[in-house]
Length: 273
Image (cartoon, rainbow, N blue to C red; front, side, top):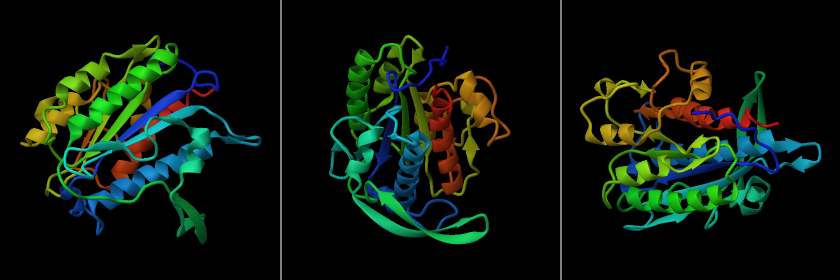
């Protein structure tokens, strides 16, 4: 377990976001007046915009990362690339913006209107073909690693509210986690959204910390152990994080979802030369 490779224009990192778009995502997220589909979609759009900002220098956007987003559940049994059919360089991401949206943000106590990029809209319909989503992710990862053998390992972040309807994705997840670059194995993070009245659980170390929920156990098992460099960053946001914990959050509210995405991407960005 190294995870020490520098990110550069010649040796980029890879982020793949998996987004549950099944019918149950139409329910409201814990502690929010919005649906899980809307909050999850918004969180990923924000993270993509933040990644662009981090990579923007005086001469433009530097190709530090490749990005892929896979949605699953839009149609029964279907998983698909939401922005493109395969990962693209972050330098191309602005070319795939669906629309711009006017928003008001409070910066230093002042309300400022901004233009916010939207790459994809919230969707909540049909079943939950999570296995199909991980199958596509595996194909993307294998292809990418074949061309970037010395790079920081790919990071996959899956956002879902429940169980797979097209078979058990655990075996595929294990196969993905065994794919590696010279710097370490591929990492899988899972953010489990729920409308249940259960306390949030962040970065548990053992299964006994989980509630009686079979989907929670499955997503926990699918999650990677958090590498030490990520533990240090996660401790900045979550006080209970320990070495050996899993990259899994249960019953996340919007704030915790955004924190999870930020931790999962920031540790890689911190390796930029």
